[in-house]
Picture 1 (cartoon, rainbow, N blue to C red):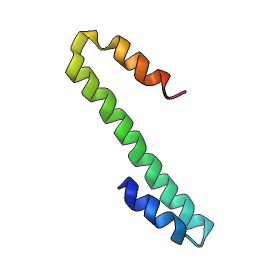
Picture 2 (cartoon, helix red, strand yellow; picture 1 turned 180 degrees about the horizontal axis):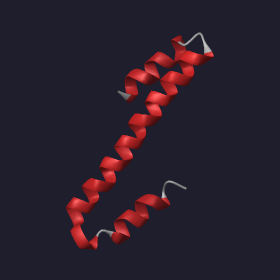
Picture 3 (tube, rainbow, N blue to C red; picture 1 turned 90 degrees about the horizontal axis):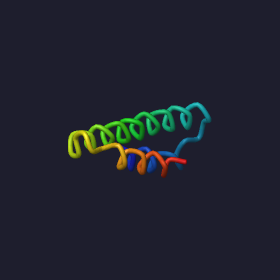
Length: 60
């Protein structure tokens, strides 16, 4: 879905449409981040702390 929203951005002639497309893209990016965190917790179990801290470090 991210690739579709990126492909649509150049065709947004109104600021409203651009805002809608960027909001949709932000929703899906947040979903990907959440799923990545949950996957790491399921993969590493109780030893997940250093990996999640490293992942969150790169968000800065």
